[in-house]
Image 1 (cartoon, one colour):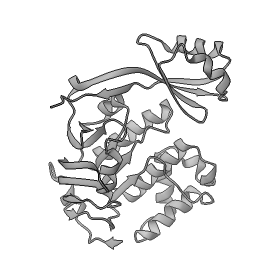
Image 2: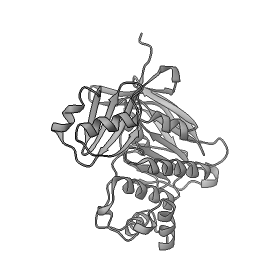
Image 3: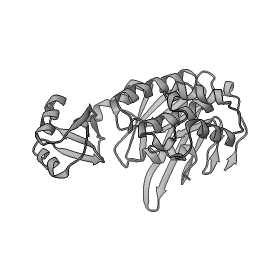
Length: 307
């Protein structure tokens, strides 16, 4: 990857200075056009949330901002530098939906390794401070391979803090977090923005996006536009965590639920309007399924006017 020349952090954080500039961005996979003419600007200290249906191109847009993908047309400039496929700048931090690490490394070892690739500026004390700031100090000498998905997300945050990232790109950062983790994510994003970073992230959780962000963009119909709340319709949806999933017992829920998605022992359940957590718990118990946690996780449909 191409190593970029450093740009003054002070200049990059000047009031209302454009940090990210996207113009006419278009991306296709063969004959499938995913993005067409996407344009927007982002400023220092700003937090933008990107929402939209599955398959609308949210992850593709973020990967184009990181330089991991090549655009068919259009331009991306970050901190005054043109971003093309293969471009790398240590000031830009990216956290994918499912991050991966060397499982036999400890958090301290991982941060020191990443730092060595970026010039070797951190001390062990710097690494410990970054881990403490995201709630991983007690786990600093554990093998990362023993971490939960939520802890892996925090490991990514520690990397961003240690590297003092001026631009932070997060793909579905709430997907692996419990309610406490989501509160910590809000705190992390707010603190980074207050420090002058530009934070851009995608999410399916519109409520969380609106609580955190200074702006919300909707990705739909290959475009990226400011969100019009009148175009949004919500479903009554819950995330239900089970001690153990049993398909034969789960069939007993079919008369009560409108839609069920599953990943391991976690279900995302859509039910009729007005159904409460208590009623949902009773239905799962009656079916013989042991519930370890239920979190309301509203799903949204984004509707646009058709020509």
